[in-house]
Image 1 (cartoon, rainbow over the protein chains, first blue to last red):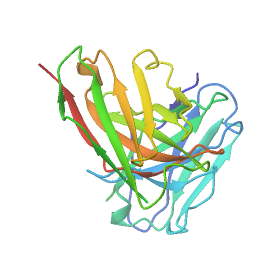
Image 2: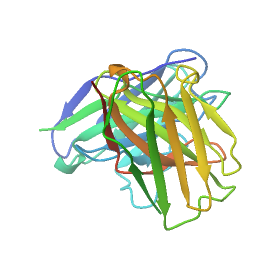
Image 3: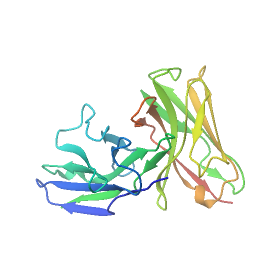
Image 4: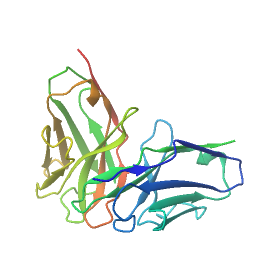
Length: 111
Length: 120
């Protein structure tokens, strides 16, 4: 099976844009959709991006997702950062047997 | 739609962990979704355990397959998880979640989670 690798932490200032990467260890990143979840302290994860780049209703358009086959990675970008965006972010995908894989998570600090 | 996990918060080593997820605000007996279990620990992060369909078909994470059993009770709108021969490494917050039956595999919504500690 493959792994999804994320940076342990990122930080940026309010109003700026931050990008979190998620690199697939083997097999093409484009083979299976990537989802992104936001998890605030003490809460369950919620979806902010599905199908690589789709936003669920209610998620601000400051959140965007993309994939890059050249680096075999997915990215979550958050523009116009707000303090409320401080959270852990996880990428997630699956293999051909529908076995689910999560990334290790990235802690976003808005300072 | 809401999901709520329930079960013992403390399990002894070598025993079986048993959790139930109660679904409200929608029927579990639908072809549109699977129903999944995910756990989270500081050591391993988020870890998918397995998923099942209303018909009873299941698929499990390879690393846990030998110890996991999932079941569903459509009459009670509940599904359940059993994890046998637990060790301290199984200490985690356990979540149940709804999963799209068609790709992409996306979990939404999740239950609030329940902490299970394995200790004597």
